[in-house]
Image (cartoon, rainbow, N blue to C red; front, top):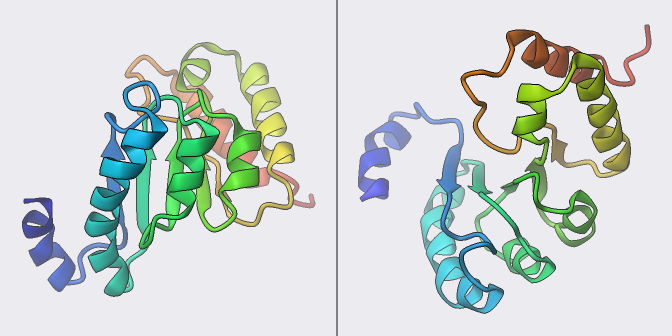
Length: 167
């Protein structure tokens, strides 16, 4: 059904990337064995046709991903970017997802409730920790709450934009 929905957009080249938000494939919901047996083939069937057309592909999986889940994700054909929740160890993701771009992991609750100074400190930790990994997209771990202060979002983007940029 999703392929049929996207088909006219893809055919008219109105799509720059295929993104699949997936709330039910997390380690909170299914074991890595079930993930490998059932979710991996579904993700490959979903993403590979788009990858064959030259479109970048991205999945966001909510919740916990164990190291075994990450190893399986690293082997999924047709998948370029894996967006991870704040519950996932960024160190584990960095060491295991060698063949993929990593995105996300910045806690949306922190973005909603922390001070601007705390956001900057957390961003510094995240970005310093990902130094040397050429494929990391800093972004929130999930959807932003409607109560997230604009000043916090602005601080987030300004810090990332200016991170290690010479003055």
